[in-house]
Amino acid sequence: MPKVQKTVLNRVEGEIELKLIWENGKIKDAFIIAPNFRGFEFILRGKPAEDALVITPRICGICGHAHLIATVRGLEDVYRSLNIELEVPQNANLIRELTLGAEIVQNHIRWFYLFVLPDFLKLSKNKKLKKYEPIKGYQWRKAVDFSSRIVKVISVFGGQWPHTSYAVVGGVTSDPTTFEIAEAVSHVDALLRFAEDNILGMSLDSYLSVETLEQYLENSKESDLKTFVKLCLKHGLHRTGRAYHRFLTVCEMEHAFSKGATKRKKKDFDIKKVSEEDSYSFLTENGFSFDPHRYSWAKAVRYEGVPYETSPLARRVNSGDRLFLNLLKKYRDSYLVRTWARIDEIIKILTAMKKWLSQIDIKESFYTKPSVSLKKLSGTGNGLCEAARGSLIHQVNIKNGKILSYNIITPSTWNLGPRCENYPSPAEKAIKSADSLLKAEIILRSFDVCSVCTTH
Image (cartoon, rainbow, N blue to C red; front, side, top):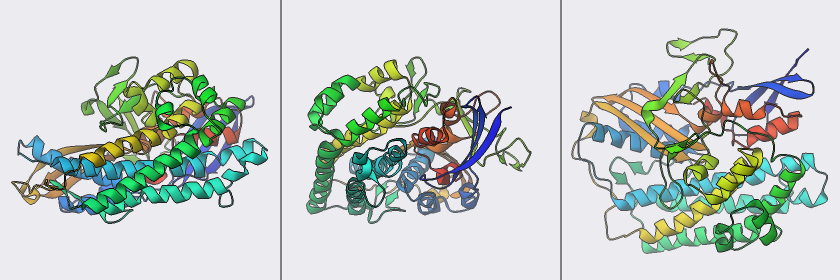
């Protein structure tokens, strides 16, 4: 007889419950339950469109800035859909990417040191891992300190973090000085040194030339990434946690990653192919339903009718990154590869941030006033953004400047949503065949769980 087990996942953003069906010592089926309803899409209805720039960053305390960027892009897309000219200065685009990049780096560092590495304290009794012990471990504390430092880049250009609202239709409210840009450069340089000395165990240039796991292990010194890779190989995490091997990225970030939808071959992303299904969600097109088969407040998101993973791994695949294409050939989309991609992105984005900072021209504009006030517009817009956990979509419909409807599709909804009639979600599939509760939780954490975004 199959055994049913329920558990609440800890060390994630918000709350997630797992319902696991066990048979013969392995997980036969898994249900990921997002138990809380928040209702931001309902709160936004009837509000002036520009209010969304203040409201949506409150969806999450970790990736609120990504929601701001998706919102402002959605509102600007309303102008484009109506063929109204709207110029966003290059300086504004650079600063938006900089602050978004800083938020992503902050998230990845904290996720790796606070959520991922402490799991191995439970799998291994190696005293050398004590440095990753929460609160007490010196490497744990160092990582928290550096993750806080990179957020200062957001403060330099956005005034505050979290819940930043400095991006507005037509640009940004920033007017940075040469000194402030130099301050941001110093923060990025400090994080790059931290990454070389602590995460990589090798120089930045040497790491960027790595193409295989064996090459990395052979040429790197002892480091946190090297420790992680060895532990994954030791505990079989290079063979488990596989999802669908389909990868989605809705927009590019110059110098960091490209967009696309990769199934067998990479194709361009088309938002018309995105759909949401509510067969197993409490939240339905007509309101709410609590039928016994429904089990989550999240909806199922599909692209061309099938589940896709969206994540830093998806971004590496769609960018044609040789290291990760080689890792996928050997280990598929396993826990090891998915997690390594998120660590790798710290380096890719910090490197891109250096380039963006060098391109800011303080003599040029940071804002262009729209030719027509948003208060006079009626139309729809799509705001696409790559957040820390993956692809984020905001869809807005306004009439005379007021919000008629607002739809949000978060990365965690893509990855952790419930099943549809034909497929479990990517994370539900990845958990199947795990042989312990701990490994099931570890695999789920590889998707960087955020239930507050899942149940926005």
